[in-house]
Image (tube, rainbow, N blue to C red; front, side, top):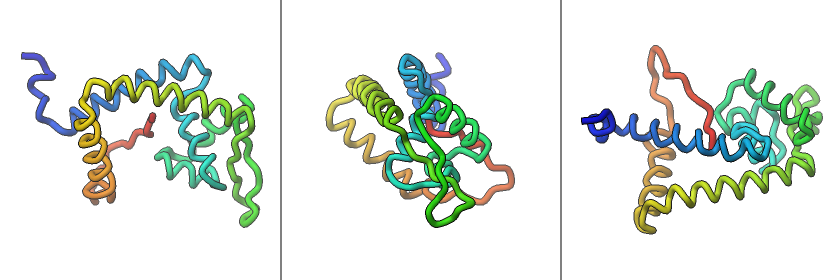
Length: 159
């Protein structure tokens, strides 16, 4: 009896293993494009509106230090720019360069292909149920953090 047999009923373990496997595969595939999943998430979020680096950090779930390092890398690669906010001169808005927009489009194609390959193991009905259930959990029971003394470390989403 392997560990997967013992843990096959454990929701946390199943979600963690699935998430980790997806993150590893996405990292490997995006590596060929010269971008990490976190950088892709930052650029993708920045395309949706005029957000400061702090706001993008909250959207994708990364801390300030990680955001600074990620943005330094994206700026260095010519994929993003920090510009002064029109409403708060102390804040910096993240904008995606033309080169960055092309990189996002490439990364989206790679990521979508990966998702299709993974979900191909399920029937169409199973896919709909899985994605619907995960969205319901994310927006419902897991939308608010429960108070606890020692919170688990939150990892940034890789997708």
